[in-house]
Length: 201
Image 1 (cartoon, helix red, strand yellow):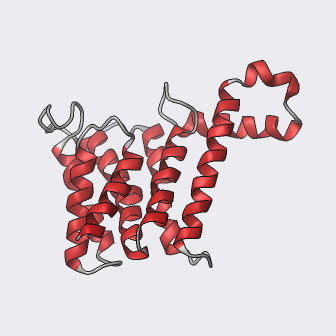
Image 2: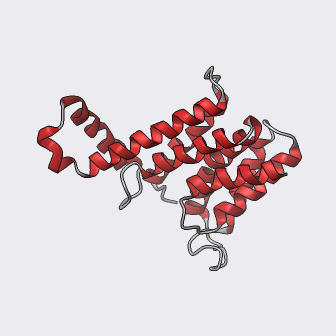
């Protein structure tokens, strides 16, 4: 089996999102969420600059030029080809930030688990072991193996943060959302839809 190194690197960074709930940052979830939304906005501005960097080169101060080199290295190593630079980081920050602002801490935590752990595990399993494709009306490229991996990884990690019933609900809803091809990036849909469904429960 050949490992897709770029995808593996992306998913390791993706999984690091769990640190938002494992590390005691000393600030509440809503404040953390607002900081993530702010970081997403700044990333969008930098992404715009990055795409126009050649035209702006003569006006770019040294620190931004240095940052450009760092972003180039990260994008080359981790970002999927032919997408906006830093798109993954922006949608990730938006999805998790919105969840922290909108939902109670326990529900936001399960939403973060679903995105950072479940989505990463499902992608890695699907890319490397996904041989049984989901029906075309659900997805054109995702597999049963990836969906099952998402369900069990979210269930296993969520069990440490919530009662078993809520953990099962988080695993089921997030796996269902991840399986479908929505026009909105799943970094946004997975945590927000999962959190909304759990809040209704």
